[in-house]
Length: 378
Image (cartoon, rainbow, N blue to C red; front, side, top):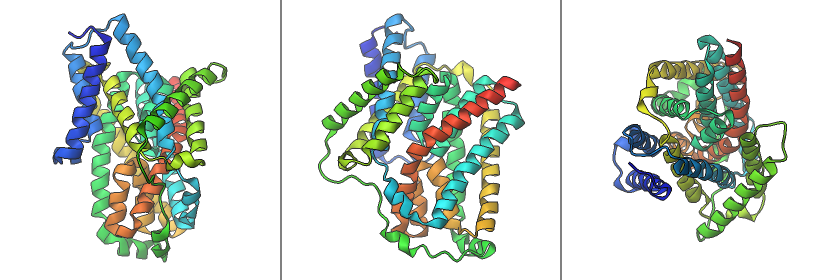
């Protein structure tokens, strides 16, 4: 049994590193089905379930301290990649499709919450999932932390995210050859050729990891200090919102061009996933099937609204598909789908997915709090 907080942190950092390296270097097919974040969470949870980690005061203190400091730092670095000015160049069709995707996802979560009569734990889990399906895993952690979701609830959300997202990507890729027929159905006549000139917020030049780490930790400290003066919101929510503000503000400065923010943020994300997994146990995962089924119902309602919106606004299949996957799948999969339509549109997938880092936190917090409120009424 591990009783030392330093050994505890080293074990989790090694776990995160090992799976990240395997995913990037080994090119194993299993990572196409089960992403590294799920592997990291599952392995950390396995170690916790087998009793590898002692739940003493020192380890618990290190857990809270590390998670509390890394979360705002990670959010800040993720948001530095946003370029709102480029996003506004996407044009009417893609903007409508993106807004439609966000609104339909939010509505689907709220409707399914009412339909399934979510309890408090389920509401917290799906609130975190809403953050992910409007942004990414980083937003899931931020929203889940702000809602006070348990480690077990977060585990549910992570598994549902992985299973449902994998099948959703497969479906959207399967539909690519039917684009012409769909566009005829919606009477879309949109020419997306102009979008090949729209760039993404891609950093260039030498990577400056130490500068980014210094800035991220500084923002983390500032966010926590400022959160002490906010009385209307709980402290974690305040920290998340301050870190989001600093990240968006930084994206309008030269900090956006400092290369390496994505790598440092992803490293922090993997460590956070390992931390959360280390506090979960296998016994709590009964009834997972209900969560997965509810996730599929959410996607089904979302799909129906997207098709209905496409018919109403005469949107093409590419626009609604990339808008959907940029929310639900994020940076890892949206560019792949865009390339399946036209390799010149890859930057559009990246740009829309990166915007999710901003939308995911705010949208997830709004939806999550509605779910928690509805759970309190049942």
